[in-house]
Image (cartoon, rainbow, N blue to C red; front, side, top):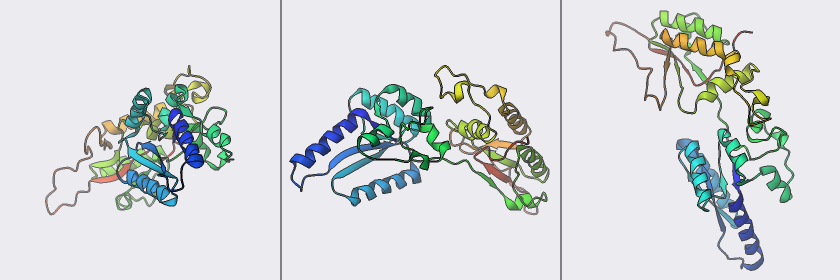
Length: 290
């Protein structure tokens, strides 16, 4: 969550003049907060905004969803150029470098320091905080929300192949998918790969196995960093995914590439019991064997 420079300056000036020169019954100072969430998550943010507004009378935040993260960043850039930017904006981790180089925001740590707040930034989970900080640990913005990769598994389906636990490694996944296919499951595993889902594959897998994604300390130490994912364990991981996809062990389930790709087979005869889908994965959850 980022404070846009000119917007915050206007807010600060407005707050100051309200405190010094306006009667107690004055209207609250309004400021805009743009965010990139939709659906249930947008409703959660709306509730946070309402709770803030109901908690005091001096300020009123006007919260507006921009639909998604990409649109939020692009709309903020356009608004800044037009001098109509929001005071606060939620920018996803991918947009950190863009904001950092823009000079159009107030760094979170500087904002807190200048206003007399002492923040223990070690209270944030390091893996989350680093997405929004410099290589020296200086917080550029406040972590607001974080996605968590998940894998769902069908206990009943796994029981039919003699398993009582989910696979713990990707080698286990490969063996289990084949067993599920042999047991009659048309779609042993459904996986989501859409416009912004690479983090679930490349980033999660690389972090779990302590594999670099790029040179220069994964890009923190310079803009001339180069990707290195073609030199790490990630290569074998992608090779396995492609092999399993070609063998029909994995099918893509994505809102963008298709409404549902992991479709059930044509209805079986009434006397038959033909299972369909066993596993749905949003993530690279298991590890590879060492």
